[in-house]
Image 1 (cartoon, helix red, strand yellow):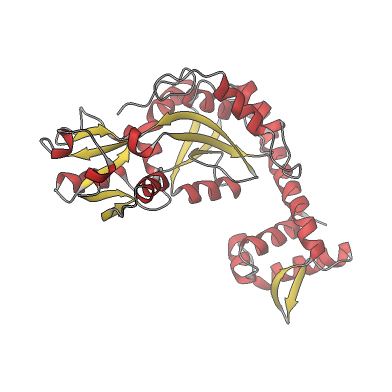
Image 2: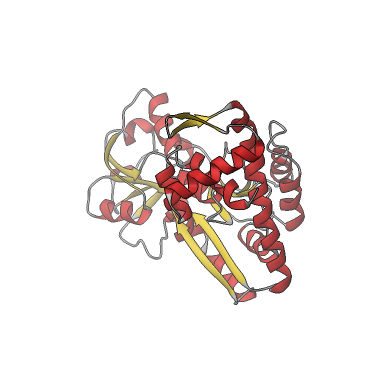
Length: 339
């Protein structure tokens, strides 16, 4: 038994049982992947995959049972390498952070600047994507830390960082600036906002549905800066995360807090359950969210296992929230992100 065999099994599953794609991911040949899987099955004495001819069609019952073990073995092998590197280079290495555009552009810069001042020899890699892509980068080991409203992934530990609300973005003198804001008044205008799945979009959709209204979505985009550009062009009323409005820069726009319409969102920071985090990763996490000290994160990482039902890390998350007073949109000492 060797790691290449285990990787072949894992990639075959990740690639939807397509051995050609698995071979491409592993930088090898399709016959090589097939051989590795067969050799492991022969050694174990069981079939891991169901087949139709030479084509894999799914996992067998034994394969489904053993897959989590295979994934844990591969993760621990990576942890072993990380631990060795930790002692070789305490303050050198690579930190990969996955985030959506809004988080990377507006929430991360202060923490990144502080981190670079403390760890100038650590290379920072910022990866951007949708919330689903952020989670996938974490799950596949392509990122050490993910930042967004991540949840519902048993293989991730997600802890709260700060609360925020949406803001309406309009040109100066717009009628929505003159009277109390209601969902009915907003429904009268074309809207420019996030694509589905981005930055609290479900709360926006729910608010309109609850009022029995259908929003006029003129333009949707992934990027708050793109949304603001089209609002400046008069294409509609923008709805963006409050952190994405900067009065000193967005001089052609005005913002109205829409928390009463769309509620409060919580941005979370996530890491893979069972991952080995180097010391500077903990330092970055605390720079981004001072409530997430190393003991808090370690407690969350060690308080639950994937095969123990609902992860107990939610207990640690709850403790962070419970000891954090409501400071007008923040969690703990983290001030609400500027609007």
